[in-house]
Length: 298
Image (cartoon, rainbow, N blue to C red; front, side):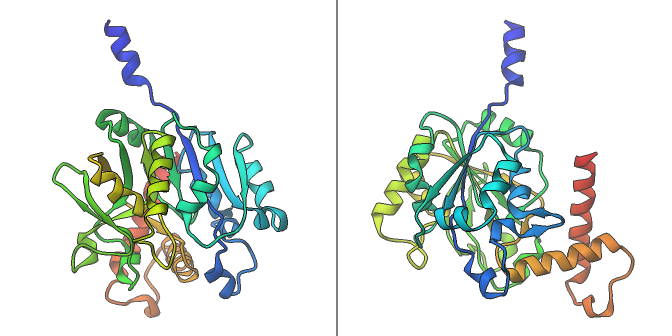
């Protein structure tokens, strides 16, 4: 009996990981980038490779891509190199957001398997095994990877998917492009990875959100929009905290990241042009990030 218990505690289940990446990346194209957004290199690797590397040991990926991108760019070749066993799904272009992208590829998302949804324009440092262990222990119906506190991108004007969280670490409410507090650094924000107990549960709420016809952002529905429907049905959604978030969602975000990472790698005193009021906190944040990344890679 004791051996069975030990064995059960060691089991970390595998996920199917759904990556909706059919967006046209208009802001990057308008800024002069001639490379598809997921293929833009950050520190020598395409964005999408950084995302895939967040999930060590996982091979069951579903990449949902625009048929135009698969036909006209090296996207398919890159995805096959990164994850040879992945399913690459081609869909017609649309402007309805990630929820619609998932629905269009619903036949490729298995109903009875634990499922992660991940966007394709960020990275962070974490212990993925601890994340899986936490899901096993808490056994929520869903979960979001989130952050709170000081993060350099929150100094800017942009808003992200805010989460109201109870004292036990469960979501009470989620609102896209919203802060629940006057100081954004006191709010929890979704980082772009979402867990659902099954693929069937994910698809059920994608369909409900899509058919609701309300609450979207300029006609688009995002992962954040699923959670209030889920919570209203009495299901649970755990909030898993990460310490850093590398935001590459816009050209400005990416340029800021590259700038500060270069300074953090170089070390030494900050140039005069970068000695703004928040500069010490920003450079400390990225130096700590690089330190933790190095320790995880050791």
